Image 1 (cartoon, rainbow, N blue to C red):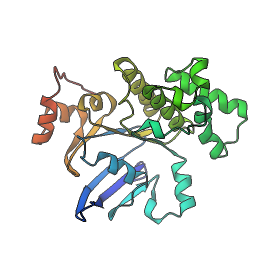
Image 2: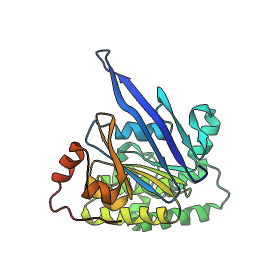
Image 3: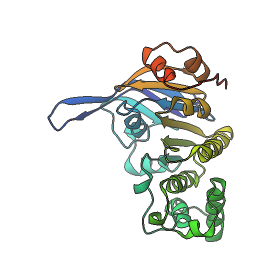
Image 4: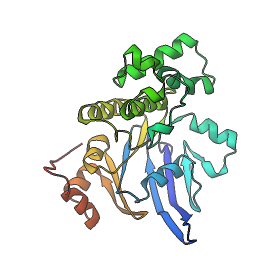
Length: 262
């Protein structure tokens, strides 16, 4: 279909343990996403959700299955071709501590993707956009903009990483626990910023262990356990009428869950 921007079919990823046994981190997962849609991938630790995200962006090679980004089978692309596709993607990895070059200030770290991509804009225009993104994410003090990663909190680093991911106006956002180090107020602000980009046509895969957060961030959810797909569907249906016992267990652990119709 022409309007599908991400398509995965039968993706399976295995790792060999130190003892030599084979572990299926992702087992036969299929999904698709159109521009302006958000898919939340929900599951506990070890469920395979991060490995799935990394397979979707081509950082992990599936042993079986196919992933297409922007209509291109990523397994068939050369290194240069894959790099060009990734320039149209924003990736927010789970650990923000290793995601920001330690020698760069927060502002320079956000400018860096534009420099690497050879963006045809003046240095001042690039810095203006970086400052605007950081301010949008609640980072506007001169001290923060001039601070290196070592001088930032985990939550601040996470927001700098988000600004980096948005710098090139990506068509697809891949976000792995992007609010894990935010407090309640900034978590809502970050989700609001991401939702604004989705409403303008960006597709987003949003990985989280928090089903309640998934309900506010995405209109579609897949639930994973032990590398397998337990359940998938519209957010409202998953939260209010789950089929799988594991999804029911996740929902029962959320106090005062209310209807989250999208």
